[in-house]
Length: 294
Image (cartoon, rainbow, N blue to C red; front, top):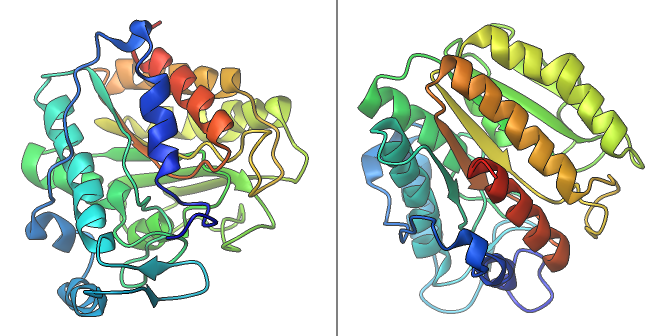
């Protein structure tokens, strides 16, 4: 996307470097495979997939909107990013691993049913949730999105679905402009807890404790999917929330507690945003350490 674009390859390099530390040497590591078309089509219409395939350039760059572009490597990367989410679901649902973190790009939570936007092409969280239901018989899935930007795409896809609960903390007002508390979905399974610019650990933890976590607990999910954006970190240049690494560790542990009660501990975490390389790396390390039970 160019060296000045915030959603750049250095994001993954920063994560890879910090996960080289010896405390992470026990992790089971897999390469993300390319997703099957049928998995995409559970979350997106065939016409949308075919339109993206036609748009993908063989040379140069095609701009889809002011934030979102495609180059020759974009479509393969998006297919592998969604494939990593599906593989993680397979590994967790078959209990090969207890939980999984998927460090891939591009992210997914802004991709609506038939609209790419916000650096996103396929909604990885939605594809993962639908795969868990179709391939593994999951009845209820909870998605918790702590990216600083609201996951309008995930909300759009599950607005009228009583079997998937979408919950989010995010800065508001901020891109993409959705995520008000009164956006509740057709079956009251959309739960938004917006934060204000300048909010930090106290407000985030209060939103989680009072709004998000009780609703997920009451939903009794068979699987928890985390849309793990780390751009609410105080160092991030894209927003104005002041979280620190310990907040992500705390939130991860609280979600794992709910997963232990209702879902056999099954958690799949998918990388979304995070544009301060230092903040992203440190927050990812704290998140993964919590997933490891450390």
